[in-house]
Image 1 (cartoon, one colour):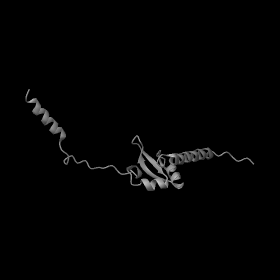
Image 2: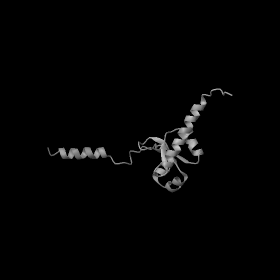
Image 3: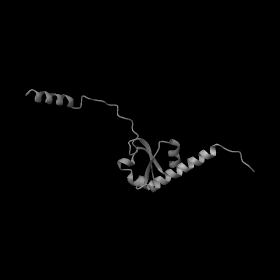
Image 4: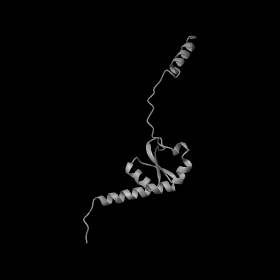
Length: 116
């Protein structure tokens, strides 16, 4: 009996391979974790497979997901790279609290040039 061709099957197979590759990267990682692309569906699949997924930054400081084995997450949760970095950026721009470095530099330059 021939089944009708389903266009979703190759996509599902490709996605399953991507999930397997991502899980293999996590398991074969030096410390039990690996970074992977920002793909919510992939992150959910990896998490459903029993791995811990957090939002982090990769080595190029780009936002990405980081998947951990459960053992690695238990041991690395106190490390800076073991916690999620998904925090809203600080909106406080208070220049009154910081010293006026530019003014100090200009004043020093003016004092030094007074001798010429």
